[in-house]
Length: 490
Image (cartoon, rainbow, N blue to C red; front, side):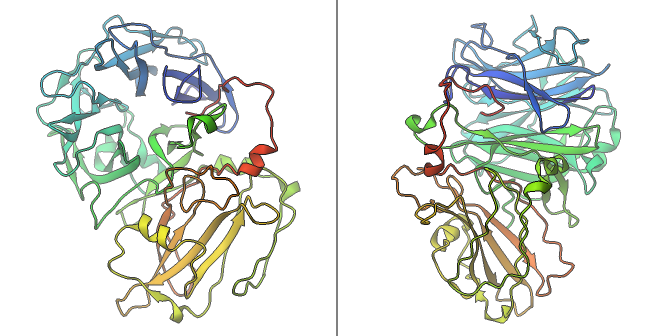
C-alpha cells in the first residue's frame, strides 16, 4: 500500500519460528521500496470468534478521505474462515503502527453452500459508478474453486451477489489469494482507486493462487460494474493459453497501485520446500517487486523489476565482458564478481539458426520438457548460458541456460525456450550433499524471436527469480543470533 508518501508492506509472519503457524500480519515501511524499516506486528490472533487460529491473508483499501482499511481472513475457534475489518488507531501516525479490529467483526462468514474451511483472502475493494463497494473472495463450492462477489454501501455490511464474479467447473482446487484489477499498456491503466471511473474501460485481470499445486494463474477479460459480468478471454489452465505470473517459485502474490509513480506493483512469496531441519532461522522470502503492464498485443501481462532495483547496483564493483567467443563444451570464468548478489545482463549472439532443432508438438508440458532437457543435455543450439554460485571444483553449481527450438510452420519464426534451474526453480543443482529441494519447479519462458535479433520485442513476461542457497556458501556463514529474523519474508 502507498499512503501519504510511504510504502507499507504487510506480510504473513510467524514470530515464533521459521515454518507456517501462529500467523500474524507483520508490517514494514519504506520510502523507496528498497530500504525497509521493520515495525511492530500489525495484527495478531486474539479473539476465538474472529482469528484465534491465525490472521491470514487479505488486502488494504483506501476509503474516502484517504483512510486505509484492512480486510483480512481469520480462523475462528470453530475452524471456520471469516472476514474481518481493521482500521488504523491513529491516522496522524505516518507509519500507521497500531490497528484496531472492528467491533462489528466478523463482517463475512461462510454460510449456505460455502465450504467453511475454504473461504479466504479478500481482494482490494473497488467502487463502481453507483458508489457501491465490491470485493471478491476465494472460496470452494461443491468441490470447485470460485471467486465470490460481495457488495456494500458502507464497507461494513456486505451482501453476497447472486452470481460469482467467476466460476469454472474445470478446476477443483481452492483459489487462494485472489487479485482483481484493471490493466493496460501504460502504468496508469492499473489504477482501481474508487475515484477513477475510467478503470472500467480497461481490460481486467483475475489472478488466483492454486492451492496444493502452488501455481499463479491469471485470466484476462472485460468487467462491467452494471451487470457484474466478467467476460473472460480464456479459462484458467487453458492448454492453448496457459497464462501464469511465473513458472518458478512464486506464490500468493499481491499487487497494489502506486499512485506516486502511476504503476501497478506486484509482490510474490518465494516459498521454499526444504525440510524443517534445513529451515534454520527463516524460510521463504519476498520477491523483488515488479511492475506489471498489458502487452502491446493485449493477450498477456508483461512484468519487469521496478526501476528502484537499479539503485542496488555499484559502479565500483561493475564487471564487464564483451565480444567473447564461446565454443562447444567450453567454460570461461568471469572473475571479479565478489558480491553475494549480482545483477547480470547478458546477451548471446547465435549464428546458424538453420540448424535449430524442431519443436515436437507433443511437448505440451513446459516443466516436463525442461526437466528432460536440462543443462547437461546437448542439443543443436544449446544448452548455453551461465554457471553461477559455483564452487571452485564445480561440484556445486546452478545453471542458467538457454536452448533454442523452431516450430514446424515453414516460417522464419523461432521459439526460444529459456529455463533457469536452481533450488526450487528447476533441475536440481549439482551438490556434494544429498540435501536437495524435494520439490523442484522449473522456470520456462516462451519467447517469439525474429531471426534478426535487432529490434525484436520478446515480451518480458517473467520477472526476477528467487535465490538458490548453495550448501558450501551456507557453511561459510554464521549467525550469533539463533532467533527468527523479523524481516519481510514469509
